[in-house]
Structures are given as structure tokens and as C-alpha cells.
Image (cartoon, rainbow, N blue to C red):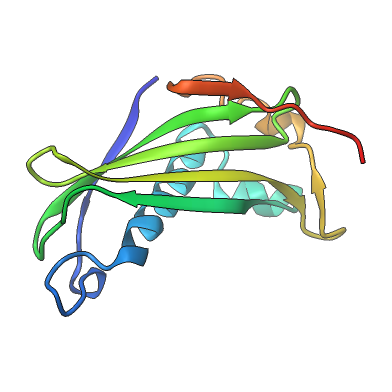
Length: 148
């Protein structure tokens, strides 16, 4: 399933050079992930109910084309990696300018954290489906976990 959202950018997204500031790209990618989870019937309220949250180990952004003041953008969601129990995941977001040109790629590697124990955890059964319908990236890989 393809998942893409179009956003109207705002004044605070831009820097003095009149293009989107570097961290705004990551903000839109994060917003898209929350919307994706909600559309998979696992909202912020569900995260609270199960006392878990997503955390990031790495976030890498590659910039391709400027996004200028006043442009709308589109951001997509592709699963790039997943461990067997869905405890770890990699997601790739492509961000397109208003003309449909690829402007940036945001790659994140994350997991779930138990917010009481402050330890990594597997998602509850109610969240095991989150990535079932996600479109896979061309470089999708199984994430192998090692015991330490």
C-alpha cells in the first residue's frame, strides 16, 4: 500500500536563504510516520494506552533539490527493513517539491520503547500489523537481531 501525504508548508519551515531549513524535512517525515500509524488504526492514544513509543537510533537526510517559500510538499512512507517480531524497523521517506521533483530522502532506523521500563520492547499484539500493508523500498532488508 502506497502512503503519501501532501503538506502545506509554513513560514517557520524556511530559513534566511528562502528555502526550507534542513530540520523541517525531518519534522515532516516524523509527522508522516504518526499519520501512517493512525491510518493503520494505532493512534497516539493507543501508544499511550500500551505505554510504548517509537524511538530512533539513526536519522539520515540527503538533500537533492530546494523547496522554496510557499511551496507545498509531498512525503511518502516505505518500509526499508523489519525484524521478525517488528521490534526494529527502518523507514524511508521521499520528500517531493510542488513540481513533483525529489527534494530529499529521510531514512530512519528505530524501535519501540516501553515507557515505564525505559527498555526496548516488542510492540503489543494490537500493533503487530502496523507494517503489514506498507510499501517496501527497493532495498528492503530483514533486520537480524543479535543477543548480547
